[in-house]
Amino acid sequence: MADRLPPRTQIGWQVFRRVGFRPHDTIGGLNISLVRYESHCATCGAHFEAFAAQNNWRKREIARRCDGHRRPGGYVDNLSPPLPLAALPAWARPQTDPKKLKASLGRRYHHCWLLKKGERLRIFEPKEAERRREEWRARHRAELAASRKPAAVLPSYLN
Image (cartoon, rainbow, N blue to C red; front, top):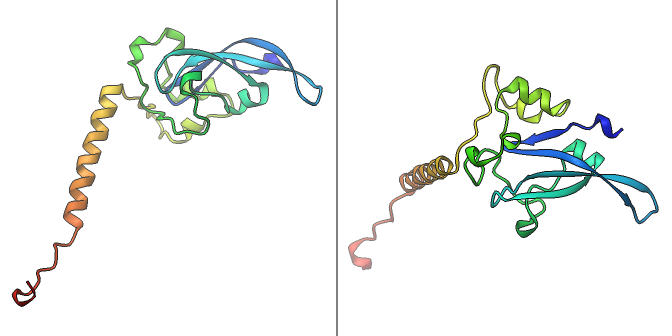
């Protein structure tokens, strides 16, 4: 069963590599094996190792942050890592080609559904992502200012 698990999986820019297994006894008395994996924190970019049940590894329900930034269920920006991609080791660099990405994800190729034929997964460097966010905020503020109605002018006898 453990042999059928993919050796690595990818969620957005974040790549998780299976390192090994560890036996674990549940509260109910079952003896299961946990998948030991490594990745880089989605908040600070630090290397971390964690454990997940085999079903969670298959479903990609795994921790995406180190213990210092742990926030289960919190939002993770899938398109911009906290550090430059060149700073990541070779195994941790994300795949952007849809065919390779589809093959690496097995049956669960969620990111490929979003890609049109021949399109690549676009991952932005941190500075580029921040610049795009600022552009969007400025454009949004300008649209809001333009859509607001001017204050009603009071007749002079009411002043």
